[in-house]
Image (cartoon, rainbow, N blue to C red; front, side, top):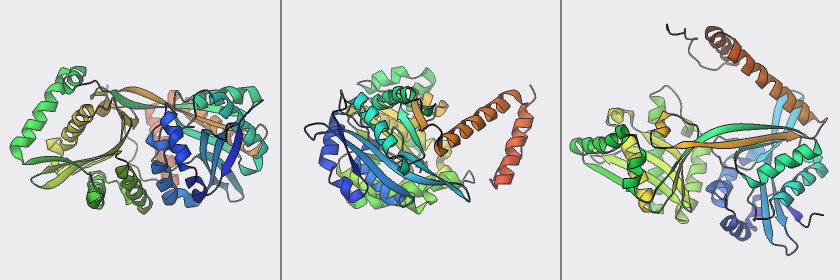
Length: 400
């Protein structure tokens, strides 16, 4: 018999009353990150939440102690002019800003929280149609127990995997350099020395509220310049996202968790890196640089400086978040993994939707693997034209 009880919060004001207990839970949760904190989720809700309905579940033990959280919200998704779908997802998901979303839980309660979470959803089926829990850490304790309970109850469920990249940092800068290839070790020193010969260089960190607004405007401008040079609009064209970053950065700076770094050349800011720390974990969230100085590798030089400062401060993990490519692996990053679990009750509107999406995904993957590259590119181009997506004409295969 489950000894826990569920308390439901449906307003931000109601959730705020839970903050002291929430923060205590995060201090004891081994998988805690900024993405599960009030400083991240409350600003996200105020910026993006108007299209969602808040549904946070607090799990309390017999002593009324908070032992688990399911920070969720419900999104209404229009499938056809006559059909809507109520999608239950993590609070913070859907805008493209959050990763490492999870269920904070006290050790020993993982299985009970997972089981009671599904029991609650079974009883409250009128609130939702399908559930999409995206970008959980691969080792999410509740997430892995949830998969077990879904199989036991025979609900329709699909598990997807995505990759990320992170560097495990040693105790000293010298030991870190040994982790790099000889080529990268040489570049780190050479590029910085070259920069210092050409310009008056200054590295600095935003450390007080008085300068934060100017620093954010600088980041937004550098980020837009970089993407505009590639004929893209950039993420900070969104007023909602700017508002989110402004409030979130203010809260993180107040808690001493903001890592917001800049590089100036001859008094002009040319590169910025926006991230944050939780305990000894650093997450790199956004960057920007002036494309006029791309030949000087200003973004590369700033990253090397930030990594060195983080190592000196005792940080032991530099997380690039989603994706893996040479721009990350050359810094000594290894592959990390996220999992997403999508599920619904059997014989429900949500289960039909998930099965159709899964079938379409499998068909697309089959076509991608079996069609000639020219045909695949042409089909993709036609789809983009029909959907009104700006894209170049299909490219021809290179001669081998």
